[in-house]
Length: 441
Image (cartoon, rainbow, N blue to C red; front, top):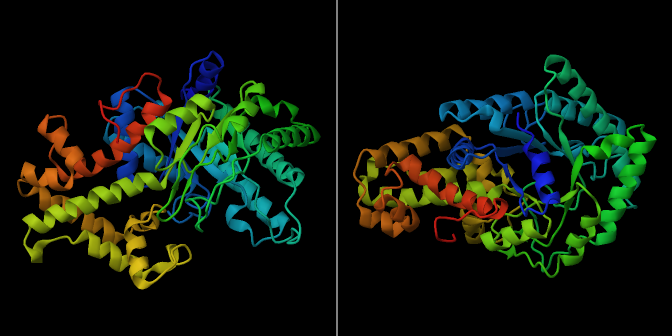
């Protein structure tokens, strides 16, 4: 297992403006695209699962940490990607999904959660104890001291699990840890906002100081040797139809504040839909870990919809997969994953289910009906010859690659390529000197 994150920190300390992209997804096609692009570039791939996706009870994917690891490794085996170049991460690890429980119960479940992640070999651990529990006062803000104390408790369990791993494999790399909670819940903002407040420098300093004190109280004062990042809000976010773009001037004080801490970088969540230029500026400014999630499945959905339009032109009505209609029917029949997030008239809800930047349709991609429809779509289009002019109409960027014989005209590859173009935005940001095929997308 390459210790690539620590190496990235060392390079930054030497003045190299590098970073690492964190791909937060449990979608098979997206993971396949991530690994294929990493293989092409001879790079590592950091893939993260959130606590609501993957946990000891299965999460909404039905996978425990060890199951998700096996799932990713099976995809890697299929494309001959070296497993030692995969870094697995756990995001929002803490009592995120047990906020209705009292502290004692919620923290015991959280401890088992982080233990399973570390024991399964995950190397990037975001300790997030920022949420109020049932036993916390509803009239007072959860204090930094309480957040840090709970984080220290989870850190101790992680390190105990790591020591168990060492007994099995003495060369096992130690996990790195991310602290801080200046982020929305997983998946982006739920309500429309007029502006985004950038994390204040004093809040960064206070978080780091309070964690240091709580680590010392817990007898783990050397823990900060393994804490390499703090989550902040650098002013980037997205909602249904709006994107808050990075402004390096507004984030300057925040980015400058962390430079005094050797070996600590900033982690930016919800960097989805930022331009490649903005992403690179973020890395240059010190936001060295760029997390992306919904934009990945948004790109997949976009590709699948384009292929569906091509299918309408080439395949007789009775044989079509009708992927767009199938997705809509499944989402309407099972509204639990979008109903609390999307608001408006029936027409507005219909548009949001399909096209919202929040991309709640990603929760449905593992449904049997969706998988069956997607595979039928691929089979239908692979059974006919797609005219280049039709590909140009609906997938103009993929058309260029097919025209220049850089992309195979197979439906699955066309869909994945739409994801890879987004991945290249992140490669441009985190890999100094990387060029995105001569064009920005």
